[in-house]
Length: 117
Length: 117
DNA sequence: ACTTTATATAAATCAATAGATATGTCAATT
DNA sequence: AATTGACATATCTATTGATTTATATAAAGT
Image (tube, rainbow over all chains, first blue to last red; front, top):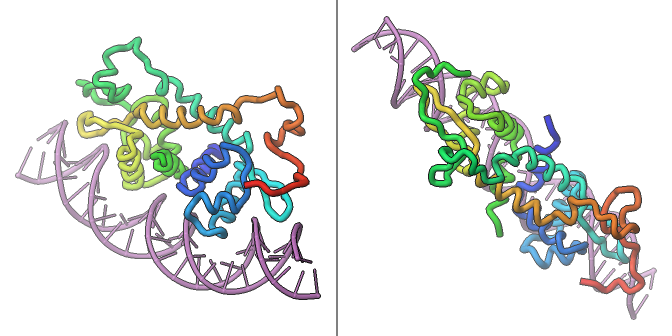
């Protein structure tokens, strides 16, 4: 139904998420990321390849290094997706009864007539 | 560094993502989700358990069924996270040179003096 | 040309997980 | 209390994927 599954899959790995958060500060070389994280260099290169294939990063050579930076598209897709859940994200205080204890939105006591699809 | 990795991991599975999107329309019974998706019932129950453990859903009995609905907290966390990338999400047209072809933000030609951490 | 530095790729190992089948539990109806 | 219906749990299998070690490529410096 959506390619968002792929985006979530990419960010599901903790190491890749850390790489993304590192790149939030601007473009970085592979070695720079390696020394920041505690992962071996081939591991970082592999993660960067996955991030690239999913459109999260781009790269360009800089001497013998390679500088990686974030791309906009997947983040816009994620932002658009979460927008569809605005009703959940934003506090809805207009209906007070469903906010008992700030636990959740839609607790509803069992109905007498439970037939309900 | 963050528990967001867990949230992304939960949404990484396509079936779970579909379940979440189904629940966006309101609370649903397990059987209702089973008949919508093409997955066996134990599979759906397992996914719902994972969603529950991660705080994505809550449930309450309704007769012999069990109604599941979305929780707000993880969506708020995701929304807060993506907010940290709003510089990427929002179109930044004030610096024109970096938007060549709408491909990405931070391409920069190689420097003469490449020493750069 | 040779060495060093930076990154990518290959191969192997190991762990995690989604899916199905079978079974258990519990509520509702008779 | 026996049966039916709804859901949960256990177990197994197959697949995917992250990490490491080793190796290849490529650019810089000497």
